[in-house]
Length: 410
Image 1 (spheres, rainbow, N blue to C red):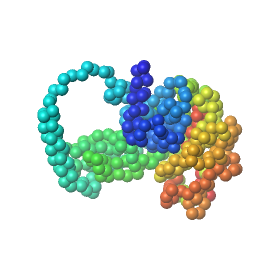
Image 2 (cartoon, rainbow, N blue to C red):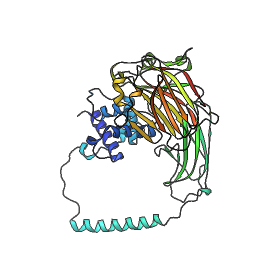
Image 3 (spheres, rainbow, N blue to C red):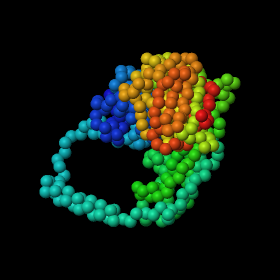
Image 4 (cartoon, rainbow, N blue to C red):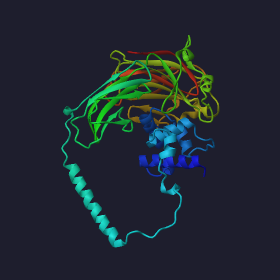
């Protein structure tokens, strides 16, 4: 087995161990949909159910994974990128070189005594930890200040963690994702982080394993933003490249011009607008736009497209595809996936080579309705109290265009 294959299998094992869902041989389409959501939540990158099933061998696919996809998997597994996984990832025993069996250093009696001593140390440590007094959050301060408008954006955090017990670790966490933590000192007062994607984040001051302070941090775009997704830093496009007189579009030729291959793993292109909107919530809104896919070849034959309404509780993802590919679609509402194997998503099948109108709106009582080209596609109840709406995003496979976007009260 080649080195890259060993590392890839190792990465999948790390992810399976992290999920603790049992053998991936028994995973269903719903499991892969949930994995896609977990990856999106932790990395900000959406990998489709089809892509994940290919990676796990559920769908025959002989090409090597795209480097950007490998980076996303490595980040989800707990590393900065694929390179760090290859360099620092400890191989599981099944991949480790076989060594000769050596004579035990200790006999059975010594092993028993060592075990008893270790157990006593563990019990004493547990008693000491359990008796520690909780840390009152009022003894700490935590605030933030973005340095600019737009993406990327650096944020200066001001904090006071001098009340932390001596010896406890102190972190500033960019969002709910615990891997986005950076250690800071007890004596320090400032720390700067960089955000590469827009949205609402819950920044945290963490002492030991306890969040002592947190606040909402809003990172908007400066108008419309387009980028080619990759981890950890997207490839941003100049406004003049994608802003046309009649639409916003990213051509496949633009992707290729940035030395990003379109095959065999087609990259995702994002067009987004995130900003404060006066009192616009999911209780009363109308969201509509026309979208068109500009790439349909090879792995992008389904022309997978996502129309996304961004809210303070998470995204509402409306998936579109060629009618023959509807079986691979997954719709997402905050904290829930709706996969095609458990729901009728046929209304989201359409000819994306032509302009496709998607309309979504709220009715009294919290019910949300979705239409595609004037025909009902899906309806559901919003999962909680109304949420603030902060913007929209459109994801295309390889390239796409959007026009006539409307987002306001119904």
